[in-house]
Length: 193
Image 1 (cartoon, rainbow, N blue to C red):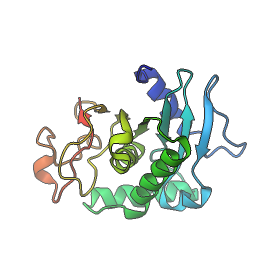
Image 2: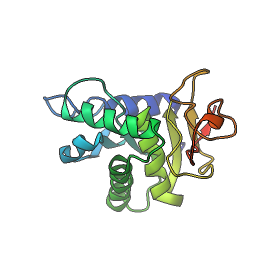
Image 3: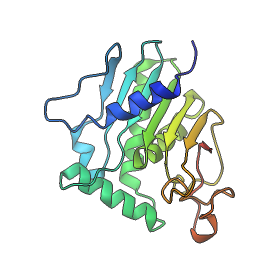
Image 4: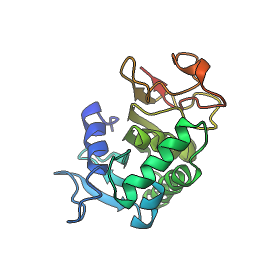
């Protein structure tokens, strides 16, 4: 089975942003819902969905930051501020790791891919790290470095970063233009391009 395409990662990442709809979650056409994260974690700024794409790949889409006044929105703001203050947003990253491991338990020996945008991309990196060798890779979009991470990890995990993006370049990676301005260890688990 071939790895998901950039379009499929985009679909799963976008699907995660529909978790806050009051009408409930509906997977994209021809995709199968495996699991959604508990709403009790929204106050941490965490929401994710595990899906099976039409090719049979399992992809976890992590929702990113949202500006607004909902419980989820305030949780993402708190997590973002912790990251930008060089602190690890422990609850949201622990939620991401636990959700990825839950999906690993539910799906057995299947390889799992991850995706997300901004804070969701950082969550995806935390989920991939928690999965270890069962993380087949993935694609994140404008994710920060992973707090308390000291080395690049999965070569099949790619972080798409726009030139000059202060969020996607917020890392201590040697290739990051902001690396010398950040205290601590915040390297991407993903390979940035």
